Image 1 (cartoon, rainbow, N blue to C red):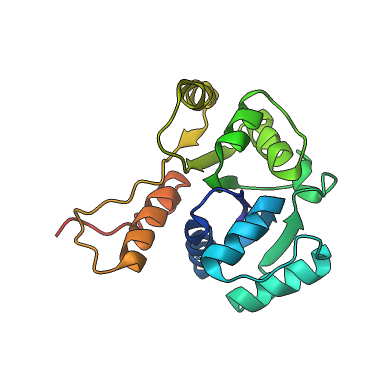
Image 2 (image 1 turned 120 degrees about the vertical axis):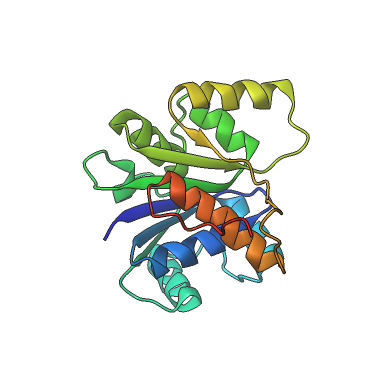
Length: 198
């Protein structure tokens, strides 16, 4: 059983994060969830999660355990908890996925800022040589965005833009999400979890 961080920023696309957490849990993995302040706001708009950003982490964890219907596999943190376990290189983590990833977060990681827990955990993934995947959610991309994404790619970060595919003939949004999240999981070296061409 592995352990993965799912970082959720305030970019649109929290539905991707929800699907990723569901899939990791269904694969028997432990998930450590971290949200920025703006992620609390966007997740309420997009998913109906009515979680206040000043919630205690104990209650935040209980909320996520209730949302995902499990107890032992989930830990949850606010991004202002810079001293959390996932901020340390000695804490065993198999990989980290930031989705959706705002361009502000991309910029912070690219310059090595560690001002919040997601940034620090990403920095730890880089220094420890562990898998870091970011799913940027922005359009159009300006030159600064592209430079920062390029910079991260030179450090080994996998960049998987939130671009759903259609060649598998999706029937609904859930099919699109399943396929896209499967592609991310393939990058984490899980067995092929994407739909095949028909």
